[in-house]
Structures are given as structure tokens and as C-alpha cells.
Image (tube, rainbow, N blue to C red; front, side):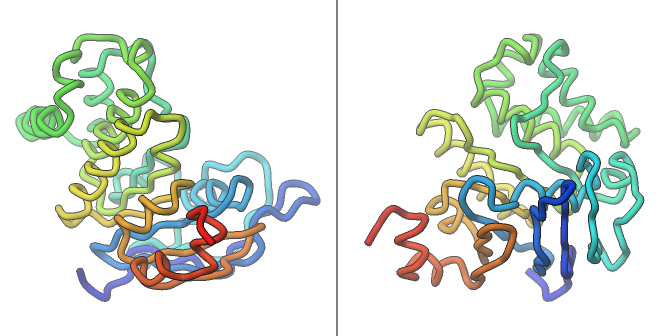
Length: 242
């Protein structure tokens, strides 16, 4: 881990019509960190990720977002991928009528190193053996957990320097949630910087280096993840204790 800032969000505000969904948040992610953004449903977490990637529907976005020292405003999604920023959206977003193998190839569409792409497919098949067993199967026929694995592997095929994960455990069986978090920790250990939005606050904070809490469009708390796990306010509001 270094002190070099990969992502800097400064005074971000997002409004849909008259509704202010994000009310001026500031956060940063340094190289090699796993940062988590936790909070209740409707706190503005997903809106924040979509503002970073420029994938929000008609709304007003103010503030400053910098990736790798340069502003992100006005860049298309494929340009973000070319610059090393990939996102696994909430709901997974796999190509349902393509096979697992074809989905992984789509993740590498900005690359032209065929041997490297083939090696990476084998690498992620090693991490997700279920996908290897079903590589010719249509992605739309997979379970929710398998689709989440595929969405993560597909994003990793682009060799991201910053990976944004939006609610990766949502709707999954507990055993699948454990597997997904095992992979998140493994990807982080490989030096890939991660910004994780997650409702399962306990697992997110156990995996992360630092955390931010969002409530009603504002960051209300931030700090070292292990410290936040012991904070009575976090325990009461998000860990079901106290």
C-alpha cells in the first residue's frame, strides 16, 4: 500500500429533480486499499458509485471527482475501463444470452494480448471453479451467486487498477456471501485497489482497511475499519448489537 491517492471525491452532490440524493460527500481511496462504504438502503451509496462512473440517469451532479490525478467528468464508460477503472454493478449485469466464456472475453475487450487473455481466463477459472465447469453455459441460466462470480471475473479481465463493487452480496445465500468475500479479500491481497459498497457492514468492515458510513446522502463517520467494528454507534446501527 502507498499513500498515493487513486480516487478523490470532493464535495459530491447529486440531485434528481428536487431530491438531493447525495449532499456533499468527500472521500478518498489510496493505492492498494480496500475501502468500504456502508449504510442503510437509500443512503446514497449506489448513487455515489454511479456518479463516479458517470452512469447516472438524468440528474444534476456537482463537485469534483479525480481518478489517478485527473478529472473523470465527461469520460465514457469504455474510456474508464481503458484507464483501469472497472465496476461490478448492483444486480450483476451479466450478458445473459452469452456463455460464461464469452462474458469473460467481453471483460477483456480493451485488450489485444490473446495469450494473456487466455491465461487470465484460466486464472479466474481457478478462483471460480464453478464457472470453469459451466464455461459453455448461458450466463442467464446461472444462479445469483454464480452470476456474481462471473460479473467479478469479467471486470477483473480488464486488469483494473481500481475496482468498484456495488452490493456484491445482495440476495445471495450465506455460503455464497462467504465465497464472494473470500474472493474480494484475495483480489485486494493481489494489490488491486477496491471501493466496496455493501449492506453487510460486518463482513465489509472485516475485509476493509478503512470505512465510510453514509446516512441520508452524507458521510457521517469514517475511520480505520477495525476501529469502526468496535464503535458502539456502528454496532448498534449496522451490526444489530447494543
